[in-house]
Image (spheres, rainbow, N blue to C red):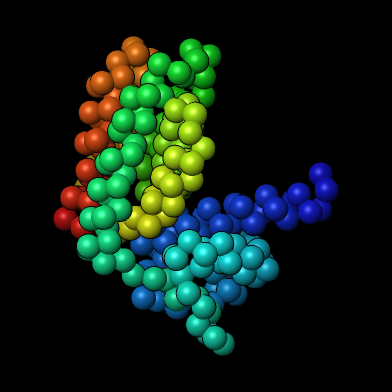
Length: 215
């Protein structure tokens, strides 16, 4: 594998892990982190961290603090409300559109992606949970065949903050929520697009009313 391609894959992996850590709250809002500290935390060198942070800064997840590192940005309750409102407008109807387009042969792969979310929840791996959740939902939405939709939803998900995930891990409720992805696939498999849309609507509602609030 060419060196440039290896570097690109590493940068993507580090970027996704850093983004998931910000969304989950493992990288706390309002806190400054240095590139060497982040590199040690994620088991890589400082170079891919600095490269990945360029993307996160562009996404509004962090800002540079000269001679210090990167400040994780805070998101106001109003902004979270706006993000959730937009996701509710976009994702449920898009899932409804995607359901009849998912080939039967692709269902086992989607099941594996859903199980990745459950496994991360069982392990209490919040970063892994966020990343697995992102991959599952964007993969499912991909069947709606709208590339611009994927870009918008991906950006909105990055602006979400799920600071209430840790209490859910402690109570065991995160596993329950993770299993909703298998329930969603049950509706995909039975081609019940309306039920899938309704479940997706409820699922996104958790983001604001419970997960982000930490209640």
